Length: 175
Image (cartoon, rainbow, N blue to C red; front, side, top):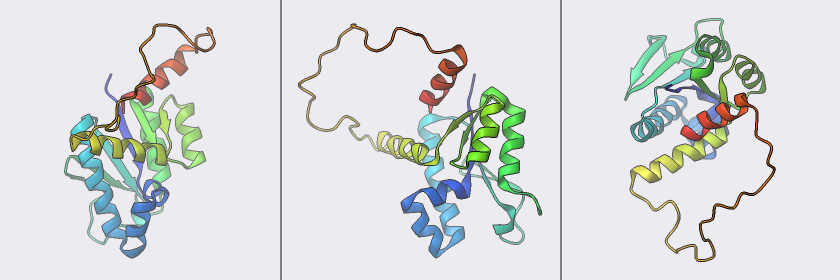
């Protein structure tokens, strides 16, 4: 089953320290930088990505839906919020959707419809990690971890998580 990543665009921008600085100077430039970073992420991971923005902040003449660098960009209609668009998409896609937002109302609604949810900051860390992988960087660092040896010894409680929780974790680990 493929995962469709649905991103609350302005929420992600404003939760990110680096993107927020750009956004404060120029709103359009903030969106462009986010789309560039998402395109780099998509190149590594390959999942379909849709980023949703509030239509009130769209430039005149922009389409409600557009595709740039393989990323689908949607603007909410006049009088509608991006949150409503994200909720509608998550309700339609259910388990196939992975919603990126730190807005509690969006997170709670989407999770109740079966979609997996990731916070904006956590997703930004995953984008940075994917960018590092694309650049050929060493994720583990330069020095070898000398104190660790592989083992099959189990740790932690023996109780297995419910099936729904295990599926949720599995989808999150994919991104």
